[in-house]
Length: 255
Image (cartoon, rainbow, N blue to C red; front, side, top):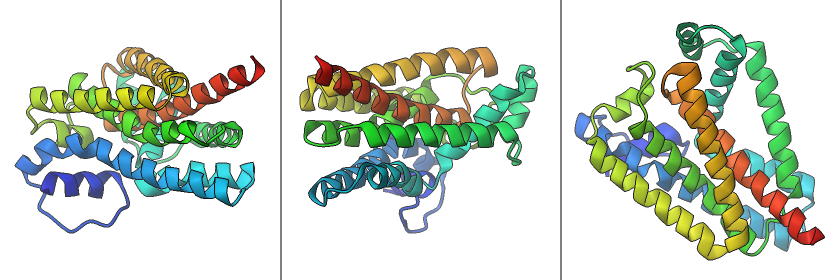
């Protein structure tokens, strides 16, 4: 239970009781990370159902659907996205990029990329048909993105060997944690395909492409992963899943 509380206290704004961040509890915290996505997805699904019942317009629907995951996560992953964009846009060597990730100041490229990201994601939420099985697929996206993010964190090498991500990964039994997170990924993937082979398959394809990009980019640019890069992946993965669902829905509608 301490591990679960630590995970929610760190990666969400959901109120949690205070517990000691002892080594044994930290060693299992990342295994609960996908459960935060389940909670966020449940809230998101509730909004999609409510929006359909009240016939809320696409602009208001898209704005709330975009902001709910960010608000519930405390924008911690969006912060990592911004820091990573700053580092990538610097075109410096690997050591300098890692220094930029640690810098608490916000650069111009972080603001520009964040604005573009929110604009594109908002437009996608305005375009998607978030009803029926598609709504369930979209609601399961946050759980899959966190399952994959956690799996990468315990599988790929840490670029710095220190930092917030290392605080969670160093005490854990890597093999057991990897096994738990693989189960999370398999269950989420199976759930997506069971809910809707078309929309769920599209979401999986989007997530897969995000994984491929993240794997190549993180090694080429940083030599591994960090907490900021994990946040960058989570944000891009969720956008890619919604984008893939929108594209499939448009293609099916035309055909």
